[in-house]
Amino acid sequence: MRTTGNILLYPFSVIYGLITGFRNFLYNYGILSTTVFPIPVICVGNITVGGTGKTPHTEYLADLLRKDFRVATLSRGYKRETKDFRIATAASSVREVGDEPLQIFRKFPDILVTVDRNRVHGVRKIMDLATETDVIILDDGYQHRSITPGFSILLSDFGRPVMSDHMLPYGNLREDKSNMRRADVILITKCPKNLSPIQRRLIVKEIGKPAYQNLFFTSISYKAPLPVFGSEENDKGYFDLTKCAGSSIILLTGIANPKPLKEYFQKFFSEIIELTYPDHYSFNEQDILKISSAFNDLSASVKYIMTTEKDAMRLREFTSFEEPVKSAMFYVPVGITFLNDDKDEFDNLIVDYVRKNKRNIGIS
Image (cartoon, rainbow, N blue to C red; front, side, top):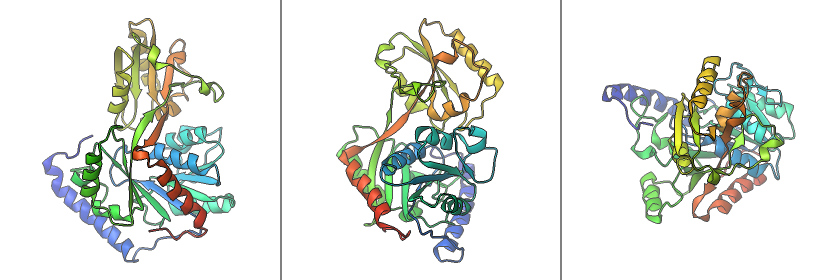
């Protein structure tokens, strides 16, 4: 994704910056009201547009906390067709709750996964309907100043440094980079696994974080592909990518930045044909025909369709896929790993916050 656009857009970036800056000023000085809830609320978000890995990090937090606490997640449910408060269930569709919340629910059916365009209303509904809830994770809630979370985690993509970016629409910033100071933790995401100590020190110096903030580095980890149309029971099978030499794939993506996934698959497949769609794309029957046609045109005797976990949530709702296309469709689960052996330190920060904060008072 671009860092800057057409220079003619720069004046609009100045105007946008003034508007968002004035809004933050009103919140900072109590002119606009914000709500503090008597329950631990963890916010996961960013100040840039595009993918920084919010969903994998939200899933990491949910998985970490569900071992000892009753967890709820709350997100907007981007591009869903409903507008009100909803709780994800086994019968939920992408149209009802959105692709990412449905992905979280399928992965962790033991937690409460909810959506609401109004985050304050959503938290209140969770507290009313699920009084046993110990902690709420706000997915993509950094700009929602109407809630003051107890703990804020800000994500910044290693490949798109915030400190050298600009305001929308000239750049990718939703608000001025100075607002990074609201975060308790900054995570530099999508880092190369061999990130050197010098590179880490340069990033820390460039950000210039205050003393109360913690900064960690994470990288994306791709797991073994799973069948798009497999059941939860069959989803525990193992797909050995190391045995795919000579095979071909259709790489089907509707995400912000498919480049890292393509680079990953280039290690295993001799031919990759890309079908790329916008982020959170709503597939239609014409797309299904195009996907099937592209698969049939592959000349290799062994061939697959590889897609993302988020795209799989939308694709599996189509009944028009026929064999052998249907059986050849796999998605790649994504996880995160902490660099520098910092996992335990981060985990302890999160768990200690939830355990100690019976009221939502923060730790900064």
